[in-house]
Image (cartoon, rainbow over all chains, first blue to last red; front, side, top):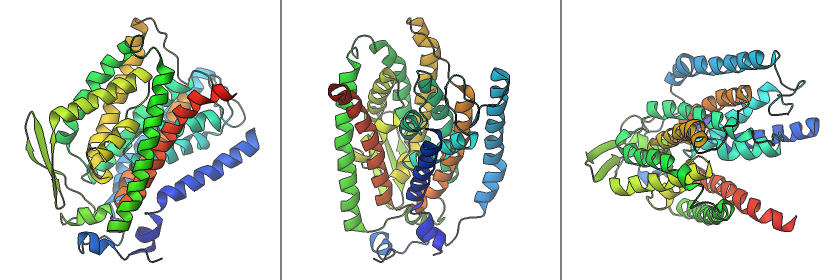
Length: 32
Length: 366
């Protein structure tokens, strides 16, 4: 199996959540 | 530390695709991209006609009263739509607290704006799951009918049965928190017992590794029997209808989507895997959302309530991302191990439960 189907796709929910948290932190830092 | 040891022990050596099927690219270009672009364009058009300018990071959205770049609103749709559609729900449970607490969209217009998002966003998941074969209208029929009936009854109970809505929400919050613990615990136990189980393994049993098949073995007025992979299950249509009815009543009386109640019930009491359950829960959240929309715009004004306008452009931008995110989730879900999906479901349910609990308890301490 490729890296995509073995790692990237199975853990994608957590990768997406981590990205969301990072962007939220930048937003808070910039606009608050 | 090894990750790929156990699938074969759990389900035999099923064929598993080594790459993503090329048809997904075609599906994206022909089906999803046009919808995505039209919703974004519609968002810009609505903003221009309503306000004469495009709100964003520099100029605030007048109704919402917040400054936020358009790409960020689309991104909210993408990540909430993706994570929630993985567990068969619409994006409200993540999108609402995020919009309120991070973006500080705190006035009453936030609820109808989120309704625009949650009405449109699961349609992306519906289209995607249909192509992956996670689709069975017979399984969805009874629960959806119950949802429609409940969605129409619910608003009338607002004034009487649910007059003490905060206490009722608190009770639901506590229940959801316990369910969340139960789901997370079972996710860990199942992983220790069966190891890593993927949706593509179940799909592989049918010969097409990228496509699950949920067959109806028998369907009568009283019961339904379905089969996927090596499993056959029989459910009572009456029980499914009553489940939909109960969730529909509670959800519409409280003015929330029903997925966050229905999915844990299916997981705990019906023991349906998330890969299969989405065939019923996604149609359910869409039906309930539309019933909610009718209730909100037509029935509530008749009962003396006033309709609150959404921030349309905000809702449309979020919905464009939400539809795309949910579609991506439908393509990715079969590759996410079931214990991680159940952990996600546990976390989502915990967020919903804690939201109601904290909301009830916070005024006592502040």
